[in-house]
Image (cartoon, rainbow, N blue to C red):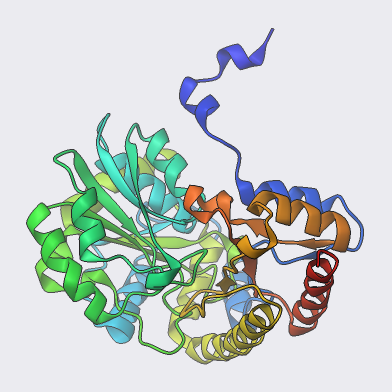
Length: 388
């Protein structure tokens, strides 16, 4: 029996993750320095681990409420108010999810009817386009340019909106570019969002990893708050990738609809992880600050290093990635990463893994130790020198 014959057309049309392709390739080779995966190299703070362990030791090993532990939703509500002056009721406006990825999935499936258009910004995180397609929607892409610091402008947004547009997904600070939207940047596009009535799905997983400027959520603009679905989680800021815990906040009706999908396919997020997250939000601000300080030092080092070796590199304002331009080498993004891995045993991700707009760039994560980053920089420079 040919199993390909039983697969759905939607699944067959989805391409494998471009990030995973290089990660899997690198994992089969000896001595590779991998700068490919967006995963903090810090351990989850001990008090978070301790809280989760204690929850298991005291028998808290059963399902929680579908929407998540009330105590955790209360802490999420307090956190969003304390950090970003956002008001969300823990009973009606918040669902605890299995990572931000589940939140993105249920947001798409809640909103999209067949043929609805969703605006995605490129380069963008690899899961957005498949998410739209699996929900039956059509992605409409806006290419963000390095010359404009990878920001969304009113002109670009206006040109992309049609009468079929249901939503736009924003991700600032951006994976993979590190692009950042300030309050002034949002003030220019908020009237367009208000007038069009489209929903904003705001993936704010890197909000805490903002460097020179304060993070601003589109949900902080009262005139469009009801149009915003805010998504975040614990993976990046608290070094909790393996815990798979996130959350989604929004209008009561949207949250109730998303909870229908969530309760049937997930039931509830892992219980021990939820107890760990309560501790994270109550007592781990200082741990986050320490990690952000280290990321900033690494960012400054690696951006200077790439620019010094002739690869023009935008100074990211958030997240933990740089997006060097490799056009001067004459190689495509895919060729650059393949040959770099083969010749110097350094793994990066082709910019094209994040959409066609990523051609001519590579994504390099600096969520690795400074020693690994320095060794990788030496090898990348040698790779470039061999081509002169």
